[in-house]
Every structure is written in C-alpha cells, then in structure tokens.
Amino acid sequence: MQHIENIKKLFSNHQTKHPLLERIEAGRLHLSSGRVVACDPLITNDKDAFIVLFPKGDFTTYIYKERETECIAYTEVIFENDAITQWEMALCNGQDIKKLEDEEIFGYPVKSGMGCYMDFDTQQLLNELEQLLYSRKGEDFRGIYEEFFHEYFFNEKGAINQFASLNPKENLSNNIIAFETGYGEGFYASYIGFNNARRPVKLVTEFIEISAD
Image (cartoon, rainbow, N blue to C red):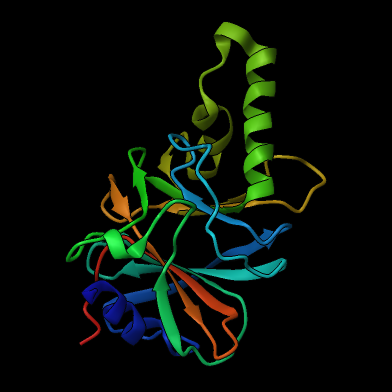
C-alpha cells in the first residue's frame, strides 16, 4: 500500500508543507450526522457514506494545488489537532480491504471533473433540491449542475473558482464542499488518519500523487 505510506508522510503533521503543493482553505464542512460522503455529486448522488463515523460540527477543509499545473492534488478535512498514529483507507459498506491486490483502491469514480465532501443528510437535501427543480421546470430543467453548481464555478467570462461551498437548502447549515479533481476524470481514494483513541483526526482524498520524498 504505497499510497497510504505517502499519505502518512505528507499529512501526519498538523499542517502539511511541501514545495510542490499550495495549501488553500476551502471553507468549513458542516456535519450534522457525522456520516461523510465523498463522491462526484453529478453521477453518484446515492453514494454510500464512509463506515467510520466522524464528529458532528463544522470542520476546516483545505485543498492542495499542484504548483506546476495548478490542479487540485489533495483535499483534507481536519477534525482535531491530535497526533495521528494510524492511517487507513476510507471504506464504505461491503468493502473489504483484504480483497484488494497490489495498488488497487476503493474510492469513487469522477466523470464530471468534480468531487465533493458532504454529510449524508446534505446528500438527501441535494437530491430533494434536484427533484424540486425538476418538478418546477419540467422539460426546461437543465440538470443539477447547470441549475445549482455552475454559477459557483463559472460566470460569463469563464472559470472563476476551483472549489466552492454550496448550501442545497437555504436557512440550513448543511453544505457541500465541491472541488475540481486533479486532471479530471478518474477513480480516487480517501484516507483517514486516527489518533491513539481511534478518533478520526483527518480525512484526505488523493487526486494526484505527489511524492513526499
């Protein structure tokens, strides 16, 4: 599992510093249930949450851009500042790490070029928003990307953001931290850093592997 060894070297310290990476705060992820979903929200809007239960609250999220390409190489959610003693691949129901061979991973597919973190409750709100917009617009409904996501990333002059915090329901704190995924399409794994008490300290998703050495 070379990927996890590299993640360990890059992200075990409280603040990750690497000459090839630029760290940018992307917002605070609101978790109402502690069940985190990582997915391409345009193609897997029913993606299972991770098995591990995370704390409830609002947690700082970072993106790490590869300086040479300005593409997003990693995303990170920090839950607390404790020392990390163990890293594991983040799994969903039915996934068994023992069944993986060599450098195989569990993760999520991306076809839209966008990934995200959100609470399971927020996923339900996003799906309800899609159904509401469709019921209102009928044949004029252009899809959830055009109707909801697009304005956060593009305007009439072109691309304006590589990441955004979006609220699918007004007056609720539930939000989606959405971001570009590496060079675009792919299949991407997430990793959880635990402390001695087996509490999750960090959640990291890798889109471009940057060697820690």
